[in-house]
Image (cartoon, rainbow, N blue to C red; front, top):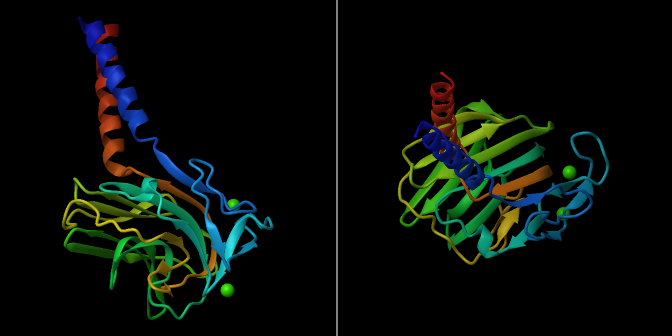
Length: 244
Ligand SMILES: [Ca+2]
Ligand SMILES: [Ca+2]
């Protein structure tokens, strides 16, 4: 009886663990803008190959303020509930208030389906992200954590519709999070996902600097990991009880 219970718990744990290994697209930018997961290859418009964070040539892209890489509008990137994005960036001096690392426009004025970038206020550079749900625009930026110009750093955003949660990450650490996002399903559009700006009728919020290693997931980081840990804990307790 206890053995069957333990096997069930192990099964649930592995199902839970496997359900959030859903990397949708990965761009190493090692010589091109191809996606190694689903072939959602980017179209490079003006961006040029540059050194990555290890100083290796032609393994990242540089954007000079009017460049972008379009991923088009593949259905795999039409997120409805949860998503996460990470990217390495080396931002440079930019007169734009909200330089955009990756985004998708809703087709309506200031509303982005999703957006990851930073906010410049005086000489401070706050990490920022946005998700627009039907009827509700959710923009957040960090208030304590800042990013640094002229230096490589990894940034990330993770969003869960069911938890109304969004978290911002810097160098692998969750630095600020919110549990008060409004609305449920993401307001999607037929506009393209763009790296290095927001494509409206023309390029807006252009990024200046280098971008590398973009990874896009169709799940939220925090919530599934918590449930996996819970299953792992229950599994370990079951194992302990059997061993006793
Ligand atoms: Ca690279
Ligand atoms: Ca250019």
